[in-house]
Length: 337
Image (cartoon, rainbow, N blue to C red; front, side, top):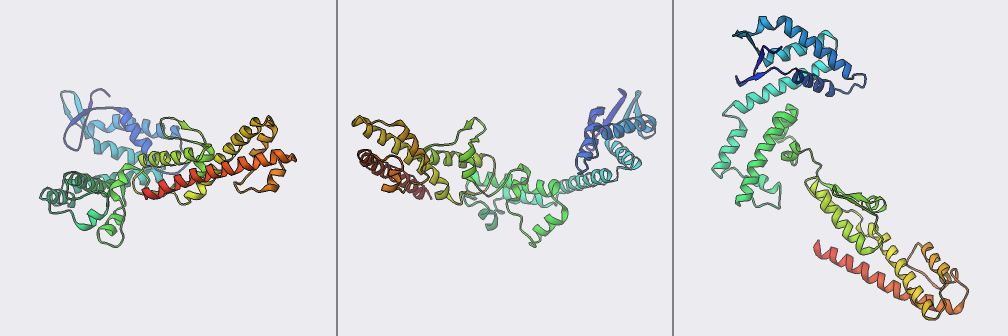
């Protein structure tokens, strides 16, 4: 069909591309949740539309210099007709509904009285930044140049969301004050909003920042550093606030890791100093699941009284070191809150 050209809604012309029809049909099928549909269904409708277009196109086209000019509306009518004819009722309803919403939103944006245009006009006059809008993001000064620029973007984004992404009943309820849709201007971004971060899962399995994979930490300072990286990485993929609901609980394994490492190192140093090195004893320290130990716990490692005395000294140093490190991490966290 090289002699066909498409007339767009704005009266511009475009060459005929059959793949665009196929894409529109596929989007219609993709918009419904029916696992029975596959590429064969899309292809069946597509071929039928091309056949009908070839048969009926001349009757609907404006012909100039052996070229047929066919409106995009006529092609969409053919798609709807074939969907009905082939009994894809759910796809037809979804396709038709989407088409209707798009037409309504185009009419909305064409109107000079539309709230979108009025909001832009008021922003230009620096009249329209109401207190609710300013409070929507407490980190932005709505009266500053950057704040004004963000308000322009926010206004455009909200009206786009209303026109293209939301059911009419919802945005009317929002505009009338029946409901409030928080952060509506972020809806077109497709990002998540306020959330809590499960650091336990990230610490146990490691996580990817998008630039590389971070392994599970083994030291309290690494735990704290990775917590900060997790927050920063998460913030890059969403908007809104985020929190860590059980920070102390998530950090506790890091304290234990740090303690056992230091306990092993101090124990090895003391035993080596007195020529009593026992690597099997060092390995047994890994079996402890708490930082709070007593003499009975040491006796499970060895029955040698001299070694127990050295282990007790190593324990006190390791415990003191671990508590100082964990307290330092918690104090830094508190000072930033």
